[in-house]
Image 1 (tube, one colour):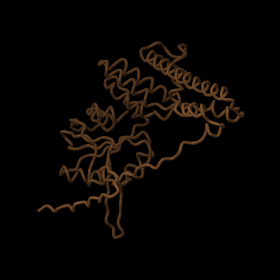
Image 2: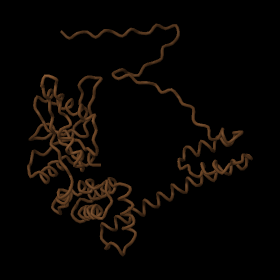
Image 3: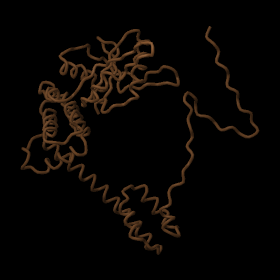
Image 4: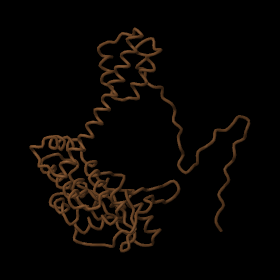
Length: 325
């Protein structure tokens, strides 16, 4: 969700950077294609690539966990961008983990046997502690999304207070209605299941929270979600009952284990498959038989889709590439 917000409103990155570091840079003018190509066979896709009037290119990575692949992909992307743009830009890593922040600063450091060094040190924006509180500013309500994201993996009282405050700032201080609704949905979308469950309990008990626009949005969100979950559960139960009815009509007896297996299944497509088989199956083992594994076509990087050769027809020999003069 943060990447979507930054791509749609690149100026948010400048606001976030200024709020957390006290420094400023040129407002990113636009988001561009984040595919960085070295050859046809190699592509690096940063989370976001921006062009800034003041900084040139800006590569943004949202990092929730340590990813050792980034040790190679970050330097590769930077090397290609420097070659293409003929200038160094910026690499900004946004994280809510101190451990990840520490890793990101030293992830891309290499040393050869004879002492040659290659280092890339990105600018890391750590969203934690007091920095999260700094993002809950009525003068900059658009930054409340980052505050909520910073505690998305937690569900205690302190984290819950930050999320509630983020939604309150969104409701009270974002005057653009489409933007306000989009940010409120984004805040709710980034939260962990544990946090959502905690907020659901809070929202459904009016005695625990005062009636505000934010609390009403919470309540409406969870009521709508509850209706959707109830509808989905009812649909699954209907399919389970239909399967049991077909099996009973066919005279196929169920063991307690097989009945429990049906009642535990919550995948509509699998229940549909069992119902279709139950119409003609001679035993329960046929109903529950696994799907046959089909060999998947393997794609070759850099090649177009290939047409199977026909018998009696010679395969075309690829033309050798001509050298540019």
